[in-house]
Length: 271
Image (cartoon, one colour):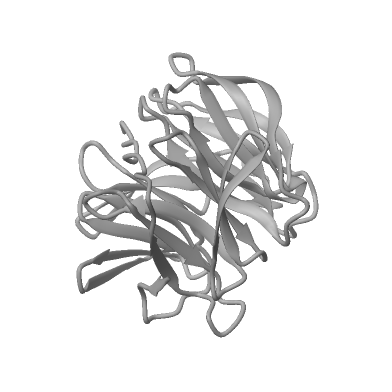
């Protein structure tokens, strides 16, 4: 286990690997960080920044405050603002699908009540709700054939799977992949590898689990207990980058671990 960052954040989250650069956010500090070799850059917002994804036209798309923003060459431009916003919530984890739509969840600010949901910003810039009655919308991933959508509402301590219609951008038929209630903490961020297995961070559990339907395949322990998310990076996509929150001495850093399986490329946003 290697510590990638010497600088400490409040709530590092949402790591992505794009070409030769690791990007991640510090949600509570409203920052987007990028690490390329020894070069470290930060873009600062005046509100929460919850997720980032690469953009086909260059730069990133970020979910921040009540909207979606284009971040390119140090400039920040509003792409879409959500008009009907529930002030009990904030944005949380989000990713683009294979056609470039942006899927993003919201979470209850008190982390207690099912006021959140899962939403999609469609290619025509229409924003729609896909799921409601969510407390802390978190990790999401798609199966390698894009026929399944994996999803976490953290307090349930479960990973769910839905049938996924890529052309329509619709999900249906929810069921449980695995119940993680026997482990400490709650499932948080998640990614998928080139063999179709899920890797999930356990917030408060101090570990990352590699899982499939009903089975734990591998466990990686971390020095920090509040593990927030995971992604694969480096030229061979065999380095697991792991973000953590600043809840103890060894929290609030990004860690890395070499693994035996490759990850998959991050999808790009179409906008």
